[in-house]
Image 1 (cartoon, rainbow, N blue to C red):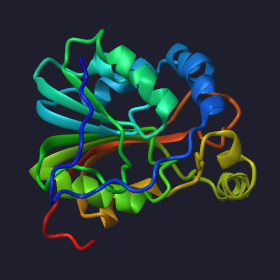
Image 2 (cartoon, rainbow, N blue to C red):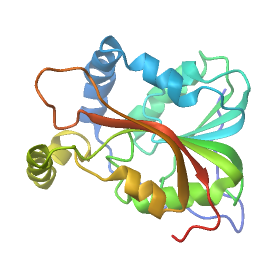
Image 3 (cartoon, rainbow, N blue to C red):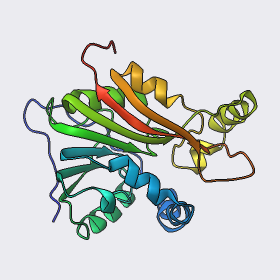
Image 4 (tube, rainbow, N blue to C red):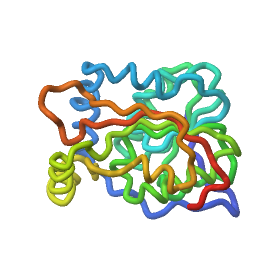
Length: 232
């Protein structure tokens, strides 16, 4: 059974609660998530968490679709999800997976955990919708132990100028409102490095496969490590 996680004295406190997105939560859980599964996202989820061990934190865990893919070497998974409807679904799912999961109500930009608390961190299709992705990654850097790994799977800024133009228009108008705060064209790889991580592997690809270019179709999947010597 999952237990609520509360900050201890002297630990960072979470920021103001996230505004619920009940319509988007239902859309994602009932339509978008299953559609991604049919498109083959399971293979990418497996790659994302393969080889992880020890204590792991996942921010923006949504309704817990990554939970079944974590290897048994993970001794504790802390799943951070601020959206209450998705968090409730994640708690339901956490009882049906072999890895011990604590589902936490917190903001990624200000995690309620001490420094160097985790062996690894995971972020999956979440940095597009976090209000301040740089702040979130800086705080992930803080809570990782020296040498800790960050695994990431995100849709990002497109490769072509034409599609980047489309992304800018969508992000400035309807897309975030319709898609729970999501932005199609963030330069997430650059944000990861400026937050103090050193990228060691990255795979760039289109997902889901489509003959027509999609505004949120360009993805990256890879690993970065906590680099204490990098400026933030």
